[in-house]
Image 1 (cartoon, rainbow, N blue to C red):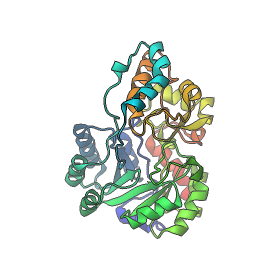
Image 2: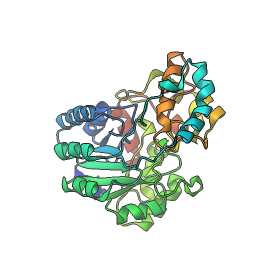
Image 3: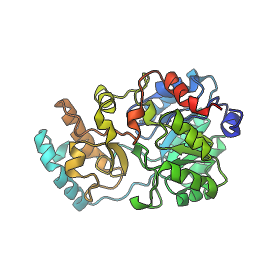
Image 4: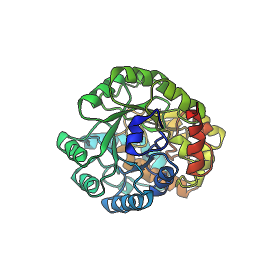
Length: 351
């Protein structure tokens, strides 16, 4: 850490941040990474206020002052018309019928909440050292209130333009999210997939474009890729897929099996599961209905119906409708404790 004053100032021993991964982790993974010397992260966008309070208390009580990150989504919920809902259900109807579902089974809402006053109250109560955002930054009054707690504010950029915007609008560090990354892309200025680039092209361009510390994300999966990111100017790295097989993760048995099979070699960007662009392991749903379907409701509203379909298929023994988010280097993921995985990645920091 001698050469990493940014994270050293936060109290981290190892400049590796475990990416927040909603649906496959809770506080246990974040705590394990913190205790091992890295920066653990808690994904908060899909948690109820009660659950978020419980998880934040668990981290605070377990990490002994070590730095950790709490991640929120900063999207703005769009308006969705009845015609849009009908068009989306037309795509899903054959699958719903296959699993005995009807349109009445679809719950209201999207299941992913943007950062709001309730979330702010949690930040003010627990004062996490780092608060990070996906899809830009929250409205200025909310952002200023977060910064007033003393938290460092990080956010994802998938282009140089987004990185410059984040610097101009109050971020303390930029997470350079390359095309390789698993899960949701942090795109917020444009939905042009053609403007996206890989981590090892994006990273040096963002480093050259902003004065903020830049954290590399996407394809950071082993010691070699960690070293490559630092050679290109990263202040830290943020691997996610590398931790999916951690003992402390809540990754399902089917998900773990997929990650350790040839299927992990084929990941695609799809909008079927939430309406937002996200990278995951290809399956029947993606092949037949997508991967990019123009009728999918805008983020996050496609997620309501997709979640019902996923649950019904899994009850029937099928994972062909499950969102197994994973990056392009998923096959490098190794099973073990979070500490073992972190220290394996940290071998790339030697020398």
